[in-house]
Image (cartoon, rainbow, N blue to C red; front, side, top):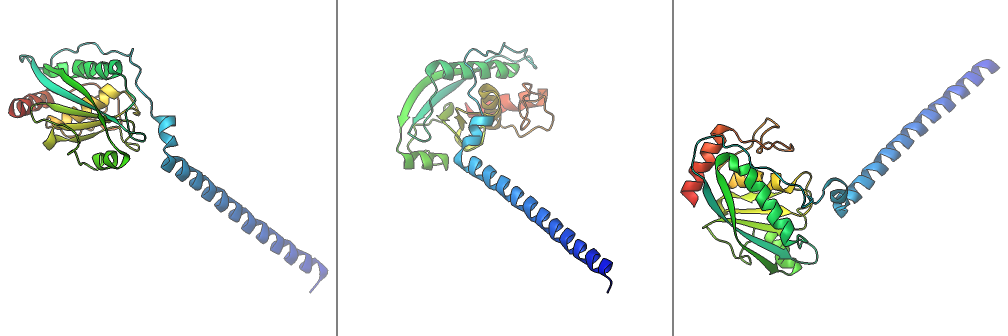
Length: 227
């Protein structure tokens, strides 16, 4: 074998090693980024980057009724969970603002949210954890109205509805506006499913504030049945 051939073979081996080293470095970088993402996600820090508290000064004007119906009042009972980890930090002003703004959105169906009571509920960390799993025995709830339970975080969820129990859980930190989330979850309590078009309240991951005529009719029928 000539000297030139030996040099060519050596160069090819070196280039092959360089390619392998580059691929290895890329894989390491991807794994490192994935590890950082998982650490941020499971630590809950992602909520502080993408989730925000809704400012109290943000207001929604009353919206035009979609169908010609008499106004109906839906009683609202609020439970503010107090706990070191899951406890809500909302002020009374913030709570009232959220519910009033949601009521403005629901005014499209002639629906008024009437706050009957705001109460604090001190829970242990274990009790709060059970609550987030759907155990509401430690919370005073009623079938005579809507029960809104407020917590600090839902681990990345904007809200949860339990239509059969007339219960919704809303966190302090939300990717969007809390009143829109509350209207969305109440829509589930009032018998609505999800919408695909982003302009609607019942769409997921959107900012729409509208209800369709069909949705309004369905909500009113469910409200008459429930309350």
